[in-house]
Image 1 (tube, rainbow, N blue to C red):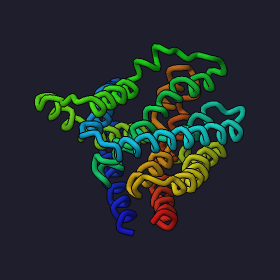
Image 2: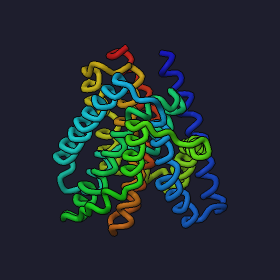
Image 3: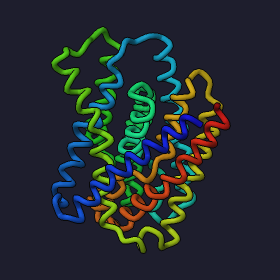
Length: 303
């Protein structure tokens, strides 16, 4: 119960950040190019710092074992999501991409760090990195209906690189000097405000009619916010060897709304950008109701 109240409080704080982004767009204080620059800052600097910062800790067999368990669970959760959405959205590539991949990096991690601190990010970093690899490969291929995967693109993905750097720093007796450690930690604290301000900026572009009308909007939200989170909760609840806080964090990552990247890829590949933004915004608004309910279910199952 206490965890649920904490999460609701953090969701309210995140909604305030979103409101700031909404106002910045409405008042034209930040242009679309400015928002894109913020997005690049988030993807290439802030989120990698969050992941690297979570690995700046002393290695021990117990945490390593839990990390490996979480990595395996992440593979299962994402494959489950891909299979379900492939069958549910056969001829709707943008809808399939939207329902399949959560906003784990830009919504899940900020919420987790605000509720639990930086500790659980260490364990869900593999989920976020794998999700981004699958978006870059499988997601793009589905949007284009042809193979577009680049090995170079995967290797140079900033979240994959940050995970590799983090694992190296964790596994080897290497310690970041204080001169680097402090900026990395400070930048990681910017994740929640910047991510939510960008989301609020997107939200202003969509009318209320676009948010609530259309069968596809409700169908995507049903799969992204209800069906996949419930199945994820049942899977994670069965996994031994990890704490309830880490289990809850994995469930938050899997239950987050539609990922912002679907709009980025849709615009880049000449697909329906407006529909992608509608999926992102509608699922984010509905998530304010769905996520506390999912976490209530989580509390009943895993305690």
